[in-house]
Amino acid sequence: GLFGHMCIQDHDQTSGPENLPARCNLVEEVDLLPKNANFKNLAVGLLTLFRVSTRDLWSETMLLYSLSRQSGGARPENGLELAQIAMAAYAKETIPSQKLKHLYEARGALPSCQSDTEIQTLHDAGVIVCENLPCRETCGSIFSLLYFPIFVTMSSFVLMNIVTAVLMHELINTHEDIPMVTEYMPLTKFAYLYRRWRRNCNRKKKLFEEYHTRLKQLALEQVLSIAEFETLLDDLVKTFVLVPDNSILGHIENECQAAEKRAAEED
Image 1 (cartoon, helix red, strand yellow):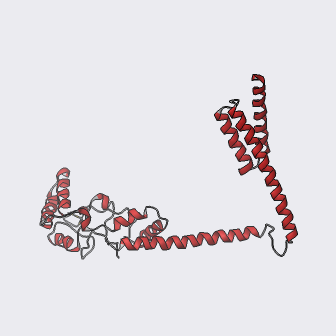
Image 2 (image 1 turned 180 degrees about the vertical axis):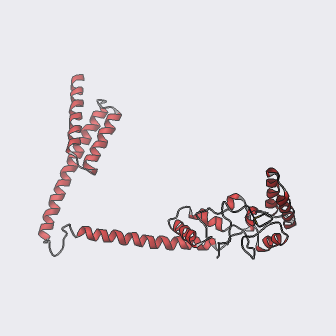
Image 3 (image 1 turned 45 degrees about the vertical axis):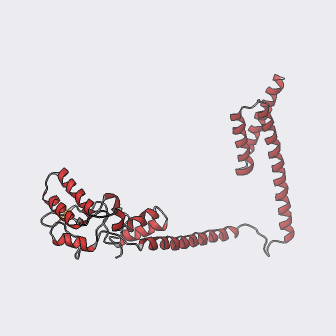
């Protein structure tokens, strides 16, 4: 596949009867693909596409799959030879710190990722092994910069249409139980319901403005503290805007009366 050859996290460090280092050792840890976001097999590949379709870190995923030799900057002219020497020393070394040093030398000689030719040359030299033959590069593809944006756009469009279809279906089912202006409801009845609704709205609006004015005046007179004013105003909004609750309105009325009584006593 286009991305199936790329290296993933927690890959096999060594392989083969001689315990030679694997080709993915040459790739920096930050450039390795996540274990749950790669195309090594069909199941994980489908999971990766689903994750990208939800737009979860899709741009970071796209950049990982666009890994190229140019990403690591300029290479030394004899980089392949230096990498071959370093990986040969890595394979023979037994001290972990020295092995790591040789590995960094090889990565520095061939930074970022390695081409098919470079990997095959190192394999033919007997300093690395490949999980599959012929050896494949460790680089990604520039086509990821085109593939992932197109896939995200198309999947978002499909998901949006699915969500819209579900919402419309639920809306239609809900409206089957709600009387609307149809051939079964005369216009005169609808006009009556509208006038009644409008009258209730105007009454609630007027009552809200009256309480808001009282609370504001009590706060300006410093009978109510700022915290008390904000709490009562929040309760007032909940009563008229969110869920109507007469008990909350009664509590606000009691608080206003108590504050007004304190103001009268102070005068």
